[in-house]
Length: 92
Image (cartoon, rainbow, N blue to C red):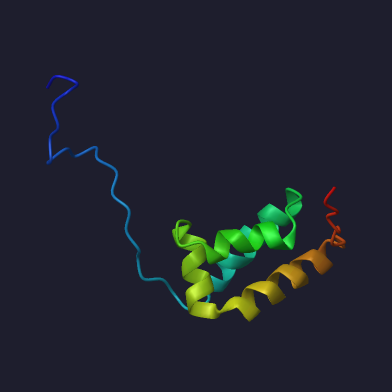
């Protein structure tokens, strides 16, 4: 098959899907994601954009199902776990 032809039955085509999970898996995934980004140095406001923006399907799903308060509390709990202090951003 030439490179410029499109095959609708391509078996190597990427397909995303949501699979049903067991109870507690959504919370565990949320905890892992928050942990990862906080340890990378992300601040709460920046991290919240991953949850609020529908473009980020996994984190936005957590935000829709668990709510904003849950996500903010998880960020604060995880920050306390590693003793990461919130940094005040000053604009020039």
